[in-house]
Amino acid sequence: MDITDATKFTNIFEYNIFLYAIGFMFLSEFIIWIFTASGNKKDRKKSDKGSIWLIILGYWLSIYVSYYLTSAEANKFIGNFILPHVFYYLGILLIIVGTIIRDYSVWTLKKAFTLSVQTTSDQHLIQKGFYRYVRNPAYTGSILSLLGIAFSLRNTFAPIIVLIICILCYGIRIKIEEKALKEQFKQEFENYYKNTYCLFPFIW
Image (cartoon, rainbow, N blue to C red):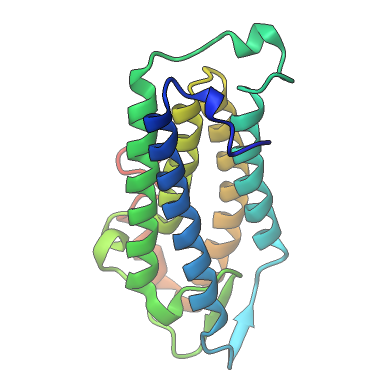
């Protein structure tokens, strides 16, 4: 996988825009990891069961698939299915919007945000910002950004495969998270669950 391969794009300007968008996404993720690592780890009940590694695998596998399907190593039959050029711009928009959604969602949770599934005795159920409508908006942002990479590289099959990977990996993670939240907040979470969407309003 070569992220510096400019031949995947119609011109150097579009290649540079893609790099800036990817850079914005990676920088934001790095800051989130630093922010989370510096958080308060006292009095936390861990319920992760290793799902953080599933998320990491899904994240990088999605990026790898998007690149591989446009590489010289990919089957020529698969590689020849290219989306119209407008999908490049859709992809860039999804990368940026998805990153902003994730950043804002993490900022809304502040110290309550963790990379592993954890709860604390003094934790509150956040129901403001995007969390008023969607229970997992930080994951929504990540999925949109990953789909954005796939669309930007314009292979027809990449967005489909990336979506399947995300549904499997994030779906398992969300079940573990929501089980922990249900145990922590009981009826409050049940009511919240009934009045919100999992990832995408009106869809899931």
